[in-house]
Length: 509
Image (tube, rainbow, N blue to C red; front, side, top):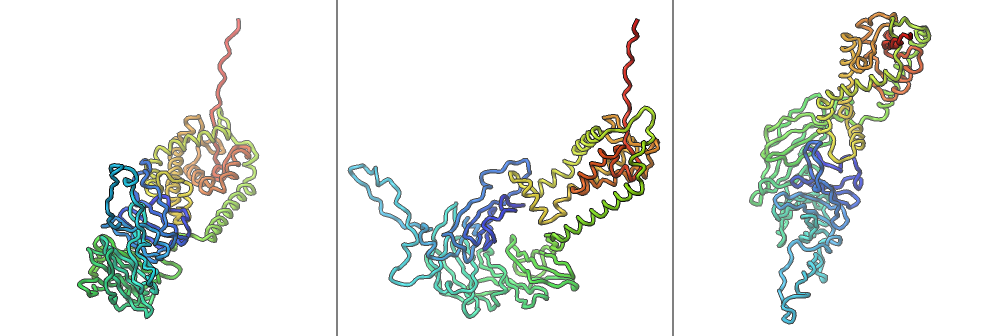
């Protein structure tokens, strides 16, 4: 499951808020922009549809204080400033008297739809009103729902939850206490006190089976196991559930990152575990009432393996460059005669040129692709790339996010090529490409290459292992007198081809 377009592209910069509504993800950025994106799950062969394109809208071009996706109402609700929302049309339009003009038999201007009534109609110019209003996003349009209680204006933190038009606003007041405001399109009830919790411990606020539910971490120290409970608003009373049982490795410390939300009929909790020099995110699923987990926590994102720094990349490049330098030093200093002296080529054969060797390599790649694509490439593309998107851009995203995933199919294909070439040359003295072009692998003495030599020449393929080494190492085949690559130079092997016999000239009489 993944979403298109948003991944890897900085729409509007940093994210301010988000909400999930069915198969839609709504992302609100700090510049006031809002994007609706669809979650998709399909094969690469399926073309993208119109419903996959992002919607770019903004509720008054401001960042919402809180947002919530109401699946039952097929809407996203948001709390925004009243001044930016009063020009939006009312969610429930007032009934209008129907008039007709006898001279036109009801036709003409009376058939035109009157302009929609906006939220400005609810503002009482003679009195004060709240600076915060509730708006609704439904079918591509933002609508004005209601003006919020004035107490929400001074709230330090605000959470929002809705269910089929019923609204709950949970907020922390100036005394750092949690308060609850309940209402709908017709008005607001009297404010109620929230659970006696530290507002900093609130993890999520949502509706479960038409019940407003709060998920909070009561632990005050980051190094202790999260003490997470659910609090449900039932019959005007906050009723706590059991503590979520979390069994963490005692050798690991719990970090500052704790997040939670609704998952089906349960709750999902994600938390950070730290050890020396490493950090990882663990997640599990618990019943709404608490207690033992429905799904045991597992590691979902090993942070120490992702977002690799440029320093580690530079160190890897330096290490590979040193290895190549040492190998080239051994070849050119310790084994100089093999580079410039004619070898013992078997009778009826000559050294294979760079052109034929390159063509044989291309044929081998084509043959291997018939196996590699269905086994490695296609499953990887289906799991990690999105239809209709820029493949290079998505690969760059994977490269930044997880190099193991990005290079997974490449490593498998490379190992397959090495095994294929080694087995073919051990038994047939040539790969499929070489057999097609009449090429053979032999030792520099003209005999059959030993098993060790064949294994060494195929394992030393740095021109395939590391992209920066491809050009200089591939040039060895052209520059060396005996057309040997690095593997041939180290393994004492060469590639030969049969000499074509000229046809017999007809005898003249």
